[in-house]
Length: 329
Image (tube, rainbow, N blue to C red; front, side, top):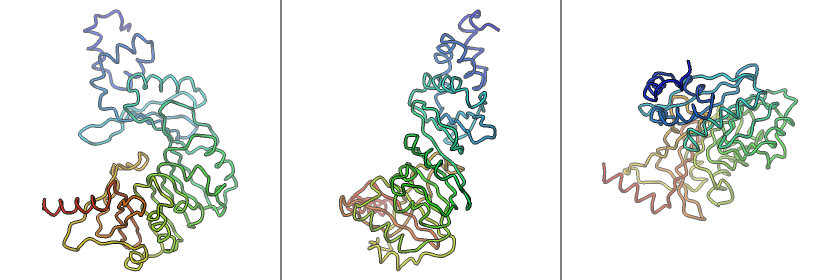
């Protein structure tokens, strides 16, 4: 079927009844067709929120998801499959096509678990690296090389059980990622809590010392580290966190028990959406204040979990917000 031979009204009718996969495939045919698709179908495509290149499938074949927002819910739709991973021209053509339609109004995610294959340098692309590093793993150097050979990754999802550590310890690109989700056996391998420089961290640890949690909060309070931090949770598998002792050690301040604390929550990083696009709310009467700018962070300790949420508010602004909650209720 040659689309161009039909009147414009008929062309639109045909496009209106095509699914998203066919629309995108058709737009790759020529610049003229691409322009037609954009002029007639952008109303359908306006709910597009992200393009996801998922390279975690076997045989190195990327799958592409176009993610839409419908009724306030993020859903996956219209699965594409590229020809073999090595054919960069197809990936680049598809990506440039998406940029033509959406520019930087949507998010572009590349997900990979293969540190032996380079990631193409595509405009506006954020990268999520997922990897499992077992106890006996002899290729940490190449994992480090992978991290250092790319721009800072947007997010890293890591199961780390090796006894060796990434190097150089304090300079690894691991700690520079904006979002990190780590399951690890030993608190020192890798030393995420001490060296993290990003926005959100989700840590699950088997072996940990409460003194390290206290040190983390004190370093944030002093302004020594964690300048970009927005949200952190750390879960200890084998022991509970002594709540009162820890809150005293970090110099926590407390809202009156009769006052309702605000709920701190943020959009979760893409790789952790699952069924909830936002972080679990931190609702706590305890908080700490940073010395350098009087910024507040809520601190919640429940059994084996410490949650830490940084507000974009000074203590005075935070307390006014609490007062407003009391008036509203």
